[in-house]
Image (cartoon, rainbow, N blue to C red; front, side):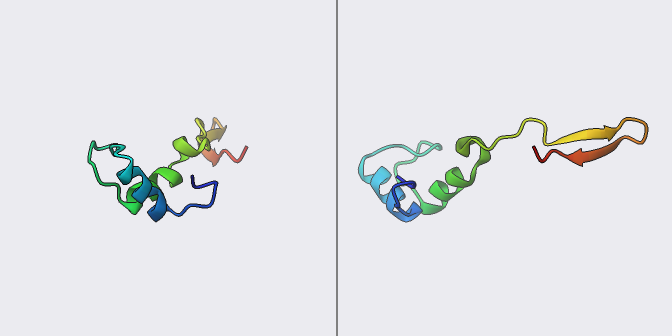
Length: 67
């Protein structure tokens, strides 16, 4: 729905109307709940398993994985 141009507010309203329970098993969806789901890296598919790595094992210096 978001990719079709609907706002989190509109999505929340539609989910509530269609009686789809929230992740917390509530009946009414909040736009903040929809927004947090849309920003969650696991739901978006942007999850990086190794966010950092040890670049130099002697100094134990870590670097952020940008790839």
